[in-house]
Image 1 (cartoon, rainbow, N blue to C red):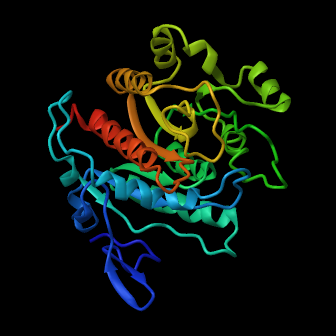
Image 2: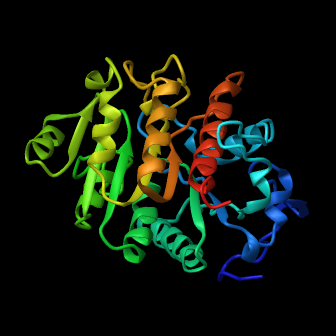
Length: 310
């Protein structure tokens, strides 16, 4: 089994003095799947340091994984069954309270890079949106002419927010500083004047949420705007609160379920999604539908990506 420094229990986690089995995505046993034989690595990144409204995103990876155990294995659209056998779920990359954001991001980048070297599809479950910077940097280093597709309610383009350059509200600004081949943002409906100026400079191909409310012609235009290789970051608040309201900062006027699915199906059919993350779910008691919605989305997206290769 491949070993990453600092990971001493790849199949188990410690709860006080007791060692308990780690639960995996879709099937609790995926944490025990042979990583070398797996095609997909699900990496929980429960990092939360800069959330500014509703807190709790650190609980999201566990909530998504727990909800995924209720997802049916069969995908009738692609006629795939039991993709859990292709998945290895890693131990969560937890952050100690005194660990700075940049140090956590450095650790996460190394882990994602390690799995990319093993030629895995890496799926990172956040946590706040800040984690996407590390995921992007790892993929950008490995794939030339890589585009980024951001599905989000918020621009996340502030230079500094509440004193931090590594804020959930600044993650796309930090990504722009890495000089990506292209960036496309979809579903944006909340931004400040500073962020609007960056859009006016043409540094990001912008599809505002209001533009997506009528018809589906925008889906083809979104896919046309991205290159062959695409990294995808999904902020759960891109959904309309009628679909998913358990997020750190809910915004009215977002995407609905079938709009999202049709976009992802078109994207994966015409482009190569080489990795993705899902962030900013904020689990709430008695609102398990939000956890399940995210788990189902991750499952379907994995099916879409693997569909032509199995």
